Amino acid sequence: MKFFIDTANLADIREAQEMGILDGVTTNPSLMAKEGITGKDNVMRHYKEICDIVQSDVSAEVISVTYDEMIKEGEELAEIDENIVVKVPMSGDSIKAIKYFSEKGIRTNCTLVFSAGQALLAAKAGATYVSPFVGRLDDISTDGMALIEQIVNIYTNYGYTTEVLAASVRHPMHVIQCAEIGADVMTAPLSVMKMLINHPLTDSGLAKFLSDHAKVEKK
Ligand code: E4P
Image (cartoon, rainbow, N blue to C red; front, side, top):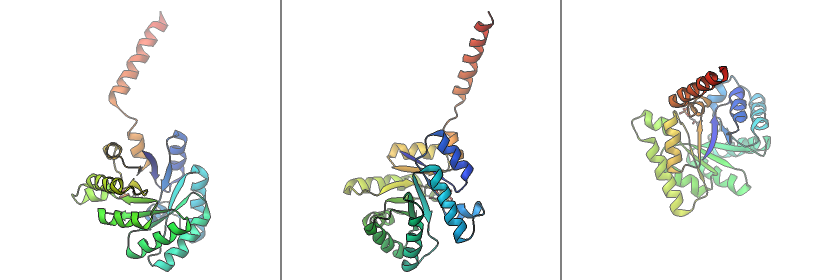
């Protein structure tokens, strides 16, 4: 399973990249705003900086919501770097835009997906990635992971090449469950990736190894 980091924070992206386990980056307008990135030129520059750090897929989301505007903005974003994936929020216009981009060889990530029907449309339009939001479904007492499983099964049934990118991943169990189900990608903040490292038995085991080693070294 590919690991994408879900942030626009350059320090976190660098840290995950240096861990050697990073396969890409996802951003969204809220994450860009959180970093205080405003104005078109700054936004474009920031995406380029991210691309220079990771040299792998970077999802850059359009702000436009109409077909014509999405095409214009998406083409500009795709010009920034060959690793830019144009992220479009699910809508009727977006499905048309995904089809257009896919025919032009511009890769896309269909975001804000909350149902299997939406995921089916995204795949039929030729999306590179589909992003079902696990955590936000859990937040409204709906099983987000069940949607990942449903989409993986549907795509397998028909051999769709669209990759299932589990988004809104909030904790390590989400990551494990995505891997068990066979999601192609999961995107999460750096904090969630770091939580995967920890286990109390690893900590106590290491402390014992080191203290036993110190005892014989003293002799
Ligand atoms: C997906 O690409 C989104 O950026 C993200 O995963 C949303 O996560 P959140 O629900 O924690 O905001």
